[in-house]
Amino acid sequence: MSPKGTSVAQYGCCSERRWDASSDLEPHTQEELTEDLRRQLQAVQGKANSAASELVRVRGEADIERKEAKVALKAALNRRVEDLLLELKIAKVELRGAEVVWESERNMLYDRIKECEKLNVDQAEALKLDLALAHAELDVCRKELDFIKEKDISSPLQREESLVLRSDIIQTPTTVEESAKDNARLLST
Image (tube, rainbow, N blue to C red; front, top):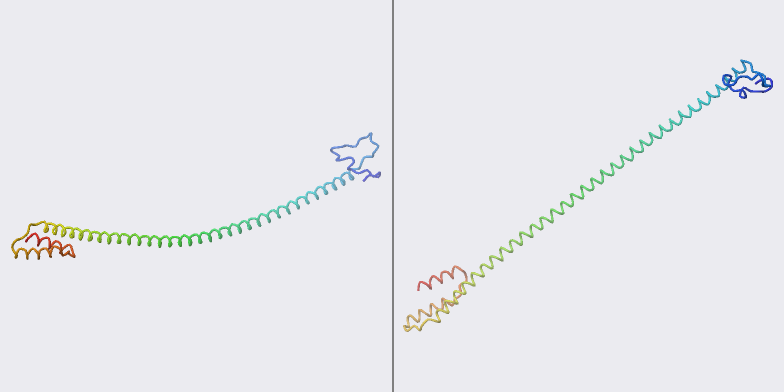
């Protein structure tokens, strides 16, 4: 400070503002200017140091937050992966259960198809047998009709043979083989 209480801040740096001879203020000495500049430099350095410290602190906090965010993100990803793996296991179990049910239903369907095929075969065989019996009965009826249409037989022996033959014709065969035998025997007489 000058004897009159004028500070160097009113003059500024000596390189930027020189002392004006026309001013009513007295010039400062070199020591006073140097001391004022030193104090200003120290203040600027203090502010710079404070700013640097604040920057370091902010960077440190940012690093901590970034690390915490990475840890939290990693934990969240791990939990999500575990959830997905669990869902995958459950889906596999459900899929296997569905496959078992499907195989069981398929086997049941195959069994029903086989039963139906067997039933159809049995029914077809029964129908064939019925048809054969019907043909045999039809043959018997035709032969009986032919017998009725024949002329009267005068010989008693022939009449007796005819009655025996007629009784054989009227008797319905129980099987196709018996019918065939009867037909052959009738044709031979």
